[in-house]
Length: 566
Image (cartoon, rainbow, N blue to C red; front, side, top):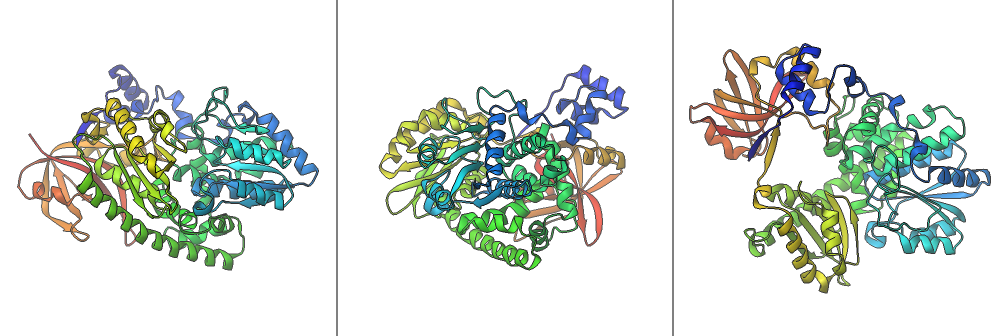
């Protein structure tokens, strides 16, 4: 692993060191987060709801608000069409609850992943028509649903699209398209998730109806779930949303979320973004991966404790089932890589299999990408030779651009720079893979395939004190764009006897530098055990966290890499 020390402007570091009366390492961390003065740090350390941008700055917002007010006043049914992932289901739940409170006749609908696939579908529009809906509002999908929107228009059903995926040069013929990534949209913050865009939509409606802001702000817990799960940058408005949403989750304002927290052993705890991503999001996602994602919306909107417990248990069991199915596909993918992929000449991994469960291929793509640190596409074919694919990337390769370059071999595709989805005919796979690999091989070099870690700077163990930990806590919430800071310490000694634990996967040990000793853990780092028993100093890269065990809290180093000291 390459260690890359971030290199902020030394003059800025000295300035911050003086203004904050801090150590140099704290000043470096501040500078690395774009903080240039004590006065300008307040928005970062105290993200407030009044810092949110005016929702009417978003292109087409006025049109969207006028359209929904017309349907509310006429008492028309409104179909809320969400994607089947966490962002889509939590956003749809938020829209349903908020619009219902504002007088709308809202009907939530999430498509079946296996039957309808991704995005606004003809089947979903038929459902709207059956319910005599005059308006469809999408959440986290629809930006490229040209044919579906035309079909809705033919049935005299208006469509408002709220989405955050990258649009094409032209837009569907919807009444309004709300997406900050539109080239003609001047909304200042571009990184909202799908639920975040929907939140701004309802915020504008609340403002137009002269309702109090709390009408929509009380649903920030739902928007936070989608924001965390979709791995958007925890900066700007997302930081504000997550800061307040995590507190709402802790306060237990939604019955369904509370039941999920209980089953996950996370109730009565101040949660982090990572605990949402790894502890809660998989259970919500399981509803759509294995079965009907409408259950997730039902769980998130019910106030019936008995129903919430039943649904939460159902999703918990399906998540266990999903894990088993996922492991089977992961094993098959790894075996295929060992047998068929030439990692020396192919800088991306593109795999396809018959009847791999389409609900887990996104997770499998992430697992393969993490293991081999290269762009990965996993495709599953159905019985008709149609493949659904999920793609994940590394920094340096824009997936959306790479897929666009190969799009003549695809039925459809969409997504972001780091994550995308695609649909392909089986007989087009070879040509697609060849062109995709050609593009990737030209776009990234071998050095970019080596895992690297960005380090804030060198830290002496003696400087990890209560003031330093207070500073670390104030940097939260952590997430993409504001990751928990990585530090390095050199020439540390091993104290006592290191141990391998957890079926031989993890290591726990204690390090000392001078008179300061701290416990350390290395998850999935058992291959470094030999370095710990040589009796020589080591260099460590790590994040600092507080470990809670049996009611006790203690500072712990979560190790990212270990090297022998020179």
